[in-house]
Structure formats: C-alpha cells, structure tokens
Image (cartoon, rainbow, N blue to C red; front, side):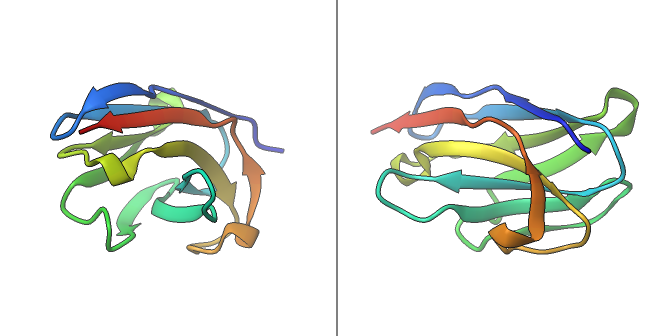
Length: 118
C-alpha cells in the first residue's frame, strides 16, 4: 500500500512559481489533481514511476512540469506562470495505470493549498 505525503503549497502572486513535492514509494503511475472550491477534483498531470512521457491537462500545458526522482521516492510538480484560476488544493495520487480519471487512483496524499493572488 502506497503512502503519499505532499508538500510545497503556499501563496504566490500571479506570474509566480511554486514547486510541489510528493514523497511516495512503489512502482505506480503518479498523478497530480486539484480541487477548487465548489468544483470537481480535476486531473493536472501524471507520470510513470520510471519516467516516460508525462500527461498534462490542457489548462496547464506549457506552464506546469511533472517529474520524479526515484532515488528520493519523490514526484514534483513545477508550476510556472501561475494564474489566479490555478488556486486550489492540490493532491498527489498513485494508480496502477496511466489515467486522468480520479477513480483510477487508489492512493491519495493529503492536499496542499496553492493560492495565486491577482
């Protein structure tokens, strides 16, 4: 059973950057999701435990980068050019296969708040 611990959220001005981290052991497909107040939890980015071609939501392509460091059992989400609409609680998750569907992920970390001010 995977255990995930996310960190790195905070308050940043529009146009700024943040890097989220998620410590997670095991060979899973790792995803980042986010949930804004009053909205459904949505897929942001995903990557296999051994790297490979990452997947991104259209809303973050070109601004966010997902990566992982297996030596540290850590998945990162580098977020650049942040916008107020990126404000949400961000979650990391682990699943058995590549997917953007929330239900396909069996393990979840606690959320970390990202707030982007205009």
